[in-house]
Structures are given as structure tokens and as C-alpha cells.
Length: 194
Image (cartoon, rainbow, N blue to C red; front, side, top):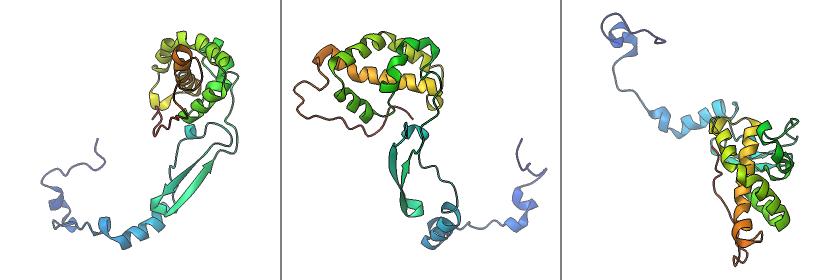
């Protein structure tokens, strides 16, 4: 049902002659003066969505953002730890729980740093426990919309990303760094989540 029902007969302009039929001005859409007034009246007084809580996975995490419409930049810092449940992963993956606190990392640079800080024994243990469960873990995550994963499912997906991150170390290189990669580093410009 329409918010404003169509007039019984004729057109809107016949029933509302005060609206007129002339050309509509678009000056307010292109005027720098109007933009400045709108910035002050709307954007500097409203809540702006500047990021997602997933971008701040733990206490002390931070990011910066330029807010052009407000003519400013901000630093967003998580000052408290996220609520912790009894378990970080879904119950069906309880045997992987011991890896969760270390390897459920939200962004790739954190996973990469963790990989480089680990020895091969640690990487091998994670791989041996987690790799056989990847398909089942992804099937579990697929039961939810990707942009609305519950906390335990999101952490399971983060753990899968970490297992994938260490798989080449275990299967091919037999060391945490890329073989013959000198000081190669990975810098992803977007994360694999929305």
C-alpha cells in the first residue's frame, strides 16, 4: 500500500496545483554554499557510521578515517575488550577451541604476523587439527549470511583463514616465511569479509 494513495482521477498536478509543473531547480545539489550549510546542519550533528566493530577485534585495536563531509579525520580505538563467552567457537568445533584465542584474527596482517612469529611445530599442530575440518567449517559458516555471521561463526571463519594462511608453510615451504622470498610481505587492500 502506497504512503500517499494516487488521486481517484486525473494526475497529481491537477489535484495539487500548488506543486506546479515547472522545471525543478537542482541548485541545492551543486551549490557550495548550500553544501556548507548542510554540512553544519546535518553531518556535524548526526551519528556517522565510520566503521564496523569487526575492524576493532580486541582492546587497543584502532583505525583512522578521513571524514570529508565533516572536514576532519578521526582515530577510532577500542578501549574495552569484547564480551567473551564460555567458548569462542561453535560447539561442533570444540576440539579447535585451544587455537581460537591465538588464531581467530580478524584481519590478514594480524594472521601474517602471527604466522611469522610462530615456529613450525606450532604451525604443524594448527594445520593437522584444523585443515581436515575446513570444508565442514565453511559449510557451517554458509548457514548464515556472510555480512551477519554470529560471533562464534565469524571466529570460526577467522580460524579457517589462519589455517589457510599457514597451509603453504606446512605443505611446501617447511618454514613460516616464503622460501626464497627475501623480505617479502603481504599487504591486502581489502579483507575477505564485507
